[in-house]
Length: 164
Image (cartoon, rainbow, N blue to C red):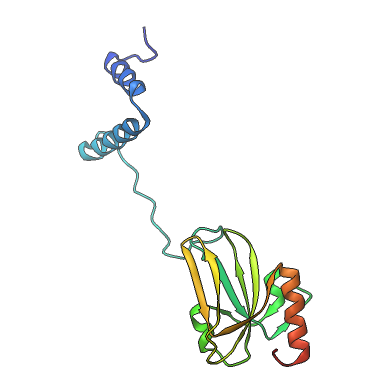
């Protein structure tokens, strides 16, 4: 005898085990829809979204970030040390001449770049992203490398009080 008390269930389960993964998924969805349609089993009300933003994790995050830098707060860690405003890279060319910006990529590889806005500059920097390359125009690249190296360069620029 089978593991099931009902012979019809045993037959369905034998057929189910003989299916490939795609057929099994389609069968489960079809059975679920049939249960809802017939009302054979009371289906709990579906969970509702709170309508808020997703919290935590990398899902939905851009592969890069940009922050203006007015000064450095060494009592904090990582990008929190950078005192300034988070910004979109599309807004960088519109910023005031001489604005210092730290640009970081999250993936495919972590990389940091120190930029300075230069009005009318035709040069730019390409940063890799999961969906291709993003170009930032109207900037001068002062340093690309590790976070530590870029922080050193930002500190030099801010201490000098002027941009190279």
